[in-house]
Every structure is written in C-alpha cells, then in structure tokens.
Length: 108
Image (cartoon, rainbow, N blue to C red):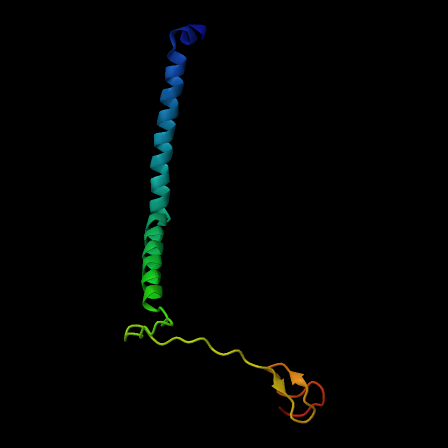
C-alpha cells in the first residue's frame, strides 16, 4: 500500500474515481430530470412568467398625465371602500355586510 502512496498512484486513482463519480451523477441526474419531466416543467414555468409579464405590461392604468387606455388595455379602476352601514332608527354604525342593526335589530 505504501508503494502506491510513494508513486502518487493513490492520488491519481482518487481523482479519477472522483471524476467518474461526478460524471455518473450528472448522467443519472439528467435521466431523473427527463423521467420526472423537470426540464419541461421549468420551461413551461418560464413561458408562464413571460406571458404574465406581457399581460401586466398590457394592463397598465392611466396616469395623471392624461394617458388614454388603448383597446388592448381594459379600464381597471379601484373599487371605492364600502362604508359602514348606519341604522336609520338608532344611528348605530354596523359592519358593511350586516343585514340587521347590531344595536336595535332594525333591518338595514
């Protein structure tokens, strides 16, 4: 054994074994990625991201400078916040989705 260490053959053998192991790992990785279609899924995700970015660019809102919306850009406006529902009988402030007053029970 010490003859291999003196001649450097052990280190050459270890480096060769390491390189072969890396090549086998990379080959098996490609087979696993092909089998589970990982590469195809990544390509599809990249295409979806590209399409979403195109969609977001196409839906830009008009700014204060008077830029008009084109036909490809629908008019998207923010909905005004829903205010609290006030009872006409007791002037109690109820939640927007309440049907009846939480104070007196009157129908809103």
